[in-house]
Image (cartoon, rainbow, N blue to C red):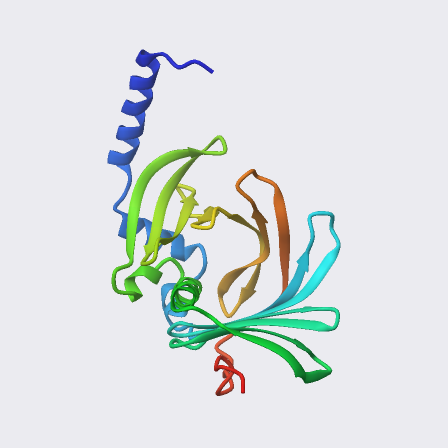
Length: 241
């Protein structure tokens, strides 16, 4: 489609007006947080435990999934597929990837995560535990308001949640309500959320769809259970013996 310079200038003018009329980013993100739950309840979250299933683009179950986040920056991802369990964990200092037979844990393969991988997973944990406030918890991380843009034919407010090591999450919000429309991560994947589970006054996504850079669906995660602030057993995130 051809765009004349006259129309392009008009489009830029409209975009500038929208940016000028937008409320300050701190106020807007507070509005976005209220879409998830009361401020006091969100601030009290110390740990989140997800259980669910991973579904292929064709609709077939691929694996069972368990995901645990614990403040300030710990996480464990456990994926169970047939007679193989894959775990990835960081405890704030070090991390590992391990594959093993659940019926015989002596049969296992353990790999040490590189420091950059550990830091990326730690940042991911911070993001998931702080509900749009993650960069405020890590030195060198930033929140950048990129204004009102067009996203899939809809008006959206684009906000970049950036962390060291070139890790970022670009989120598109409804500019009026603060509802999250989509998240694009630094690895080029786009995540959209559908439906919700209300746990302790907090709205968690029930379904998360992940798309690649071409827009093709890669997988769907359906969460069947979410637990908030359960006591995490000591050593859950530590390097296996």
